[in-house]
Length: 162
Image: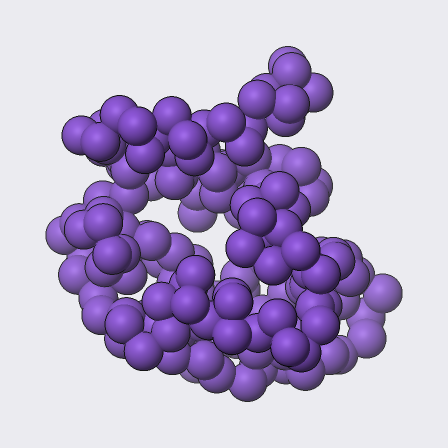
């Protein structure tokens, strides 16, 4: 959800606003290319399960760039869903849904922090952020260079949210 992270992958991406996905639950159980857990909007079918996020639009010719960055075909597949924007309008969207799942792995702390700051910057509901993101246990990335590079995206936001 963090725009600088998305724009590093796809420069044409622009946020349309907060969106809610019904019948899904935010899970940190997708096996990432680095062996840690990544986010997944996991389908439950229950109307009481909601994923809050941000809907982005991008140029169609940039989709292969995002597919590659997200690992399409290597742990994620795309799925068309309907989301509800803040103004109540339903919108068709595509999301990446996990195909490689391990409920025992944990996200790296830098990844969790990227997700958390994305949620905070986009003003997702506080109770949702507390329950679905803040409570998730994370582990330190043994690759210090990778962690440092990813955390650079947060430098300006840490100041803003203090």
